[in-house]
Structures are given as structure tokens and as C-alpha cells.
Image 1 (cartoon, rainbow, N blue to C red):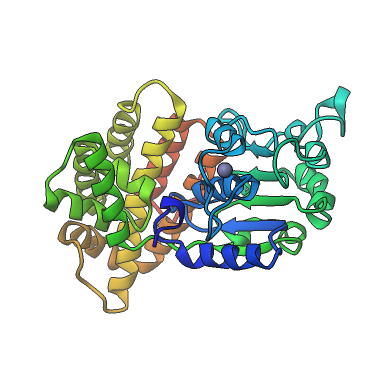
Image 2 (cartoon, rainbow, N blue to C red):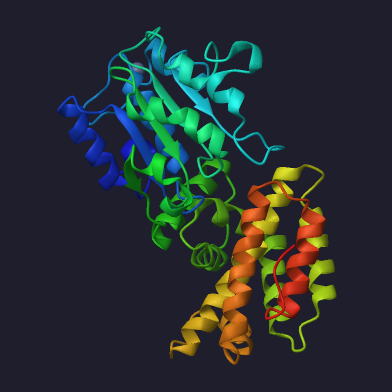
Length: 351
Ligand SMILES: [Zn+2]
């Protein structure tokens, strides 16, 4: 099955279905898993079915009641969704407890204390839960520890290690795995059929295999311009000496071609870093005797596999760069710094 149309997470759905049947869905949950596998989509679907007036068998939202209609419109009074604004590096405190003038009279922690307006319960979803400031995290602790009767709070993050221990210990952790390539493929084929744009099968296979189990990444890879740059990036990374200046210039051109808005530009640089990580990790695998897979990737990896210490540093710095994207760093400077560090991975830290 695909619970409420969400592919790849049936086991998790079954746990919630069973808990719901026993009257046990409430409290604080922490969803973790790699980006683009459907954690946020799952959280929103769960919020909809938990507030539905006539949930169907298997905790499936009816889709037709007043509650479902408002959930679909994103205007449900009992479903509170908070996320990090694009131009901020952390979730602002006022989204949780109100601004200076309205402390604890506004914000998610206050709203969740109110009686449900429509359905049986209130549900709060906090996206981008990797990005709490310590102050915001502390404000949330009491709410997480003692959610009001029947209320559910769902935090959506990427890795358990990125949460403060105080938050971790107050939540039931639900782990989302990367999607299998055939699941990614099935979703893309369905989306292409809806859009009336069936692509060629070989290209689809390539993009599903390169997506690392992330649907978000797979959708971006469908763009031929993106796939072309991925190949070009493999060449740049395979060249010795590696030219940081070329890497920076070409990466920046690719990133800027996404348009003027910051989010698509960031998404493109994230793709570049993911592709670089694919190369570097393949190099590490080669180091312990595993070659093979995508030939272009493997060729680039071979160059790196001769110096496994440099490769390890390059992995760390690339992960740092990925973190800095989320913290809303200046992209131009970040691309430059990352490219420079890949030229000389032993030298440095990312600035
Ligand atoms: Zn409904």
C-alpha cells in the first residue's frame, strides 16, 4: 500500500494506525531522516487524518469534511505549521512564544494550549527542526514534555545528532529511511503521467539511481541542464591538479542559472554538494576495495581514492558547506570557499 499516497513509509504509517486504534496518538514526535524522503509530507498527512471528523479505516483522512477541506487549504485552525523563514538562519523565537509584546500570548506554544476549534485535537508541525536556537529550543521543552491532552507535536529534522539532547529525550523518535530507487521511479513515472510528460526510460533510471533515495533530488535531476552539470562536475573533480577557480566559476554559473530567487539557487548548490559527496564517498569505498557503479562517478572517484586523508577532509568540508547553506550563508562566498578547499583539502577549514 502507499498510506494516503505517500510511498515508501508504510511501516511508519502502520505504527501510527495501530497507535490510533489504541487511542495512543498524542505527545511529541521527532521525525528524522535524509532530506527529500517525505517526512514533511507525511507529517502534514498525519495532521490531516488526526484532525479529520470522519477518519476512514487505516487512519485515512476522509477528504470531504470541513476539517479536511481546511487542512488541504492550509488554513486549519487546529493544525499549526511553523518553519524556518528563508532569510533566517534559525526558527525565530516569536514563532514559538510570540514577539516581545505578546510573550506567551501568541506563537505555537501558546496556540497549542487552546481548545481545538474544529476536530478532536490540535496538531503542531515544526519543520526545519535542525535549526532551533538554544533559546527557542528551551522555550519548547515544557510544551514537548507535557503536551496538552490529545495534542500532537511533530518535529521534522534530518538527523538525531542535530537535535539538542533535551529535545531528543522528550520526543518519540521516528526514523525515515532513504527511498528505494524503484519507489522514486514509481513516483516520478506517476508525476510525469499526470503532467503529460513521459520521459525516456534510460534517463529516468539514471536520475533515480543518482538521487540517493531523495525524491526532491530526483525531481531536480530530471532537468537535463542539471544532469549535464553533474557530468561536468565529475570531470572537474577528476582533474589533477584540481582547479578551484574553474570549479567555483562553473558551479556559480550553474547555481545562478536557477533564477534570481534564493531557494532554487540553494537547492542547486545542495545538488552540487550531494554529487561531490557521491564522488568522495565512492572514493572511500574504492579505498576498501569496492569499485563499480556509475562509470563517470567511479572515474572521478578513482582520482580521489589515491589520497584517502584528503578525501576524508573534503567530505567534512563539503558537509560543512551543506550546513552553511541551511544557515543561510552568502552563496557566492560559500561556493568560492568550498571550491578553494577542494583544491587543497588538507589545508583547510571552510570560512
Ligand atoms: Zn475528513
